[in-house]
Amino acid sequence: MEYKLFSAVLLSAAISSAQAATLDEVVVTATRSEQALAQALSNTTVITRQQIEDTQAVDLPSLLKNLASIEIYQSGGVGKQSSLFLRGSNSSHTLLLLDGVRINSATAGTTQIDQLMLDQIERIEVVRGNVSSLYGSDAIGGVIQIFTRQGKGEPAFSGNFGAGSHNTMRAGAGLGGTVGDTTFNLQASKFRTDGVSAVNPTIVPAVNPDLDGYDNTSLSMNLRHRFSAADSLAVSLFDSAGNNQTDNAFGATSDVNSSKSHIRKMALAFENRLGDNWLSKLQLSQGVDDTQNFLNGAPDLGLGAQFKTTSDLIAWQNTVRIGADNQLVVGLEQLQQQVVSSTLYTRTSRTDDSLYAGYTGNYGAQQVQLNIRSDSYSDFGSANTWLLGYGVAVSDSWRVTASMATAFKAPTLNDLFYPFTNYGFGYSYVGNPDLKPERSRDSELGLHYAAEGQHLDMVYFDNRISDLIVINTLPASTMVNLNQARSDGLELAYQGNYGDTAVRLAATWQNPRDTQNGQTLLRRAKRFSSTGITHKFGAVVLGGEWQHSGERADIDINTFSRTMLAAYDVVNLSANYIVDKHYVLTARVDNLFAKDYMLAHGYNTPGRMIYLGLAYRP
Image: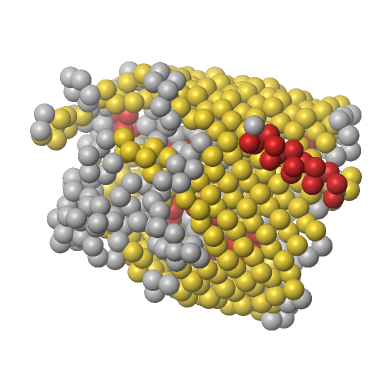
């Protein structure tokens, strides 16, 4: 009843203030081809470069936590291990792509989102719901695609510098533009902070109470040459290297734990127009996820000294336009993953051969989307997925959408091939090569409003996941397909412009639960929201945001029993002063009221933080 009343009030405000129009933002992730955001049948959000700069956020987790249906948990501050939960699904159920390239770990099954700094990012597209039929494994909660910065216009420099609390420093510089038929962009950035103690010593007295800092160096490069209006060759590179001080909740007070994280992406893409309506794209790419753990300066064999995944992908996609408004997408992919580790896995490589096809049709006020995909893995077998979507415009501004889809999550190499290990105390662990993939079936119904300066998405979703891989503790610990989960709820996102004032709202009501025992899934709130407002006073832009999360279940860091994390509210403020057309002075206060709260039990959050900066923009 609460969300129905709130939604009705918001809808009334949107209707009374908006004029009939459509958004012209173009997205590619929802169908693997270009389409207007206002026509996307999957609930899709776009974050532009301008919006990234306006937030003054440093890393990807800080930016994404303001979106509907996304929860972020970071264990100790910037650079520390993070988890992302999309629509209540597990942290390994969201696929993250960097310029279309996988950079996830084949052993952990997740992507190090905490190592992605925003200076390198041009835009982000978030597609919610089952989209394995487009992208394969992991896309149970959705897909987040990150696009690195591209050059445009006359070659020009950009740069920024800032400093703040906890001896934090941030700097970046770039050069990009177009020369003849060649477009290029080069970016470099540096971030460091002394941080806070990752684990709270008042909760874990034995932990080392020293400051746990973080240092990151990131580079990106994009180069595209057009041989004609229809043919081009593009080369791209991304590299993020992070040095992280961490805490071991079970170590001695003198222990110094640290890790090195390295994410790298390289890609070569050829685009050719084989006919008036036929666009072919061949891409060769490599994604690398490399983590090394240290204890007192030496490799930490207890945690595993190194886990490195190399993902090589060959992808050929063909987009064929059928008439003016319909198109067919057909593609082939081969993914080869190789693991190098100090842990002696019984198998260290896998291959996935896949074939996919998709049709998007526009018939006046009606839209149809059909997708199918078949994945064949060398270690566990095959997985077939599909998507059926339908939309109808009921007026110039209002649209109704509905969809059903399936998805899967491939077992990780940890799940399948971890070697038998005896940890003592009667506890041992070994992988299970007989595991099946986790499966999901999702259905959703949406109501959307798009007009000049206004954008509203309100979507009901119901995602049911089976064959969840969980640990079986008897007689020896191993992974088994046992659990079932369900997450259903309502997500709402609104953006509106009222003269010099901009308002945004993201709110989620969900019930992510284990369907066998009814318990809420860990670290997921049933209600959370983010509200922001900015107003321009001449050359000054002031902004404020309020982040709220309800209580969440977690595991006690000391006793391993189930516990509850309290609800929290955090208020942030920002200010930009536009000195001239190139220079902008920035200021930001995070956690204005120094709220003491936990995202993961026993781990600190940084408290109140103040940042000042100067940016030069072309």
